[in-house]
Image 1 (cartoon, rainbow, N blue to C red):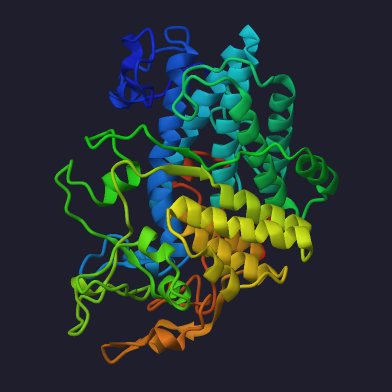
Image 2 (image 1 turned 180 degrees about the vertical axis):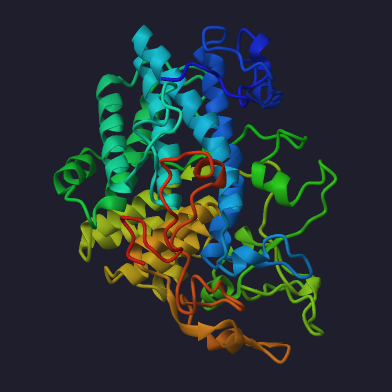
Length: 490
């Protein structure tokens, strides 16, 4: 396994102890890439976390927001207009892959190896959880990636493994790590559960296992594993998120905030706005989460725009008409929310009293995370019927303000929300916007949608990263952007 610390190693290499999480956010890059025997796991594990948060909490959130029609391109700017047309390039794919594979997975693998040698099973579990989480996020985007040979330094051109095989490997990794760790085992210094033993990492690992098994449950027989996991009922009682560690300074703020809202780097680019599909679904029953997830426009109202256009030629709709995501420098970066766990449990139990209880608990947890009341209205507007549509739409709404990437993943798996025949031109025509032509909970075909995707379809996968496919002779030919990953319903 590779024993080199990547360029994402935190700069506090000289520190002998962790005095504050924010100290570790002073990140400098060592051009000499120090070897693993120079630094210890207290320094490498935070590097793995920050590499994951930098992309999973930022650009992957942005990609997911556009592909799930939760975001639209804000008035006048065009940086992500291609995303809103369901266009994803191999060059764009480089962004998350090029950081997460070496920065998170590479460093987590190093921590695992060092922890195994020292029989430090709490640290071993934490590193495994991060490694599995990161690998899964890549599989869910690309479908196939290097896995079995990915971290072998002797193999320069690793093979691409099938997503189904990678999931099997990830489940086995997680099972093995969970079997070794005890709740009181010590864990190397980290941001997520600073100063705590392995107990919360075990709960996180169980939630991650639930996510893996539910994702593949439609195509792989995992009934016995799911039953044992659900019956043990040892899941997190609150959101799993990096929170309380961000500062209002360059390099220390929430990654999405720093990308889209801060001016630390002199950028004034404004891109992400509220999509009319999400606006229609939430405003239909005055969902209070809308105000938690998005800011009001210049008129003190909520209003969404269409995918595929930036309204730059509009006479009626200007920048003041539309809403932006509600973000702060210290907003959490969510890994798995309590609401997601409850939604998975509702799906597991189906159209039963237990399923209904977990569904309602999921919506209540979402409102609690958003810090608003009104869950009862959402439950009444979308009463539980055990259907994938009800689960899918409500999960899509719940994730729209905290984890748009997972919203895109779950809508592909559950099949909802989906495009039901409406087009952007049905909603916006002759400089007039009419959201009411769209049924709440439905999506629509963007204006100038990608020719490869076509009308009535969603983007189902990303092209393989150019940085990998151009230099790896084992990289397969890109599949069509509408070809499903192995677990997807749409």
